[in-house]
Image 1 (tube, rainbow, N blue to C red):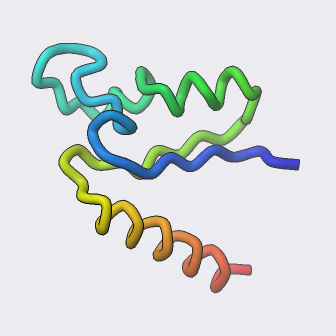
Image 2 (image 1 turned 135 degrees about the vertical axis):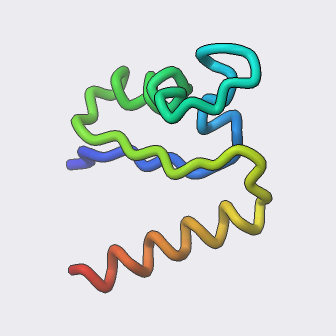
Length: 74
């Protein structure tokens, strides 16, 4: 069973400006679409690894890095 949603992406995924204009507050991740998706799917664990301004290369690298680290910890 899936119990975790991990979000990777740029400012849209991070939720930049979700709370206010030009707001880069770390609590924005609790006002972003992945957070609401995790609640809608009733997933107990939500991790947002997005970063505002991240390039597609950086996002892809972060996904690969996370998967490899997860495999090492098994």
